[in-house]
Image (cartoon, rainbow, N blue to C red; front, side, top):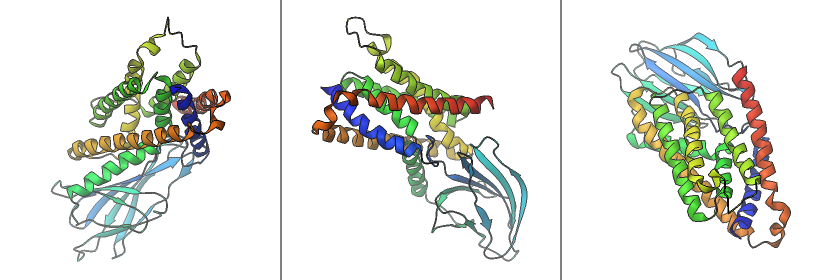
Length: 338
C-alpha cells in the first residue's frame, strides 16, 4: 500500500516537473543569479567583474550606470560559447573626484537577481542582493551580518527548489525505499554526503569540472529508474535494495558538487566563504524539507482519489523520469565533449 501511494504522489509531482522542463529558464538547471564582483582601486576608481548567466543559449543583459556622474570603461568581454555557463564583462568605474558616496545602478534586472560583493581598500567585504525595484548599490554602504545570512539561506532554498534534477532524485529515492523509516535513513545519508562535497568544493579543497558532474547527476536518476523497473526479489535482493543508504550516500557526494557550482560561480572571496557556505547549506536543507512536505501532502491527498489508484500510474512516473533524465544526460555529455 505504501508504494502504491508513493507512485500516485510521484506521478502528480513529475507531471508538474515535466511542464517546468519545457520552460527555457528551467532546463533542469537550478536558478543562477548574476554576479557582480566590485573591487576598490582608490577613492574614485573601482573595478567591476560582471558575470551573467547563460541559460539554454539565452544571454542575460545587465548594464551598469553611474547616475551621479562619472565614466565607465569596458575593459574586456567574454561570452559563453556553448549556450550555458556565464558571460564575463569587466569594467573600470571612475567616479567624480568630489563624489563621496559612489552609487551604481544596474539596468536589466527584470526577472533576474544580481548578487554583488564589494571589497574596499581595507579588505572589508559586503555582500548584497539586488533585484527589480532595488537596483541601486551604494559602494560606501555597510551590510549587516543578518542580511548576508538571509541572502545565502534564500539562495540555497531557491537553488534546490529550482533544480528539477535534484528534486527528481529525491523523489526517486522515496520511490526506491521500502518504507518511510528506510527513506529517512536514505535521505539523511544523502544530506550528509552532499554537505561534505559541497563544503570541500566551495573551500577549493577538491575540484571537479561542472559538466561531468551535471552529466553524472542525470545518470543517477537513470540508475534509480533502472533499479525501480527490476523485479524486487525479496529472497535475493540486489545490493542497492539491501542498502539504499549506500546508493543515496554515493550519489549524494555527486549532487553536493552540483550544489557547490552555484556558490563557486559567485567567485566569492575566501574570507566570506565560511558564513556563505553554512547559510547556503542550511538553505538547501530547508528547500529539501519544503519539497518533501509538498510531496508527502500530495501523497496523502492522492491516496484518497480512486482515479489515481489504477495500475497504469505505477509505471508512468518511471518512464517520465527516465525520459527526462536521458535527455539531460545526452545534453550534458554533448557539452562535456564540446
